[in-house]
Image (cartoon, rainbow, N blue to C red; front, side):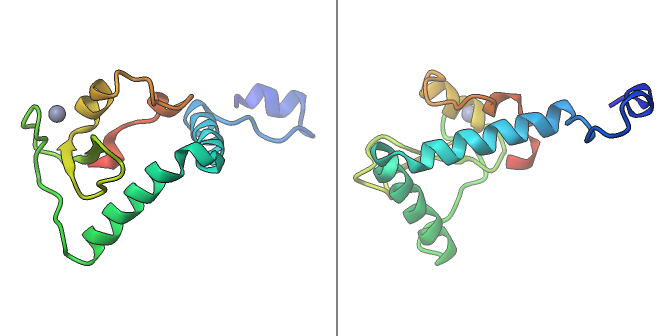
Length: 116
Ligand SMILES: [Zn+2]
């Protein structure tokens, strides 16, 4: 928000900046995604990955299996019925693997830095 808006309309709440707006959109898209029964098996597979990581049963490598980029790669599932059959991919390779079809509205507007 510019100072001019605050001076002209002091009764209005402050406008969201672009990053904050993208966060809100992403959170809403995530909420809708998680509520859909058709996505339950994917969520269960991701939960199992997080559980296995937390218990030290598996470990996240420090590089992407596809491009070799040093990063904290994401777990890609070829088959969600095998939750620990994982290909570890950096965010760009993971999105390419899905051909962007699974990207939620607003998701790509967020900075990728906090994933690493
Ligand atoms: Zn990669």
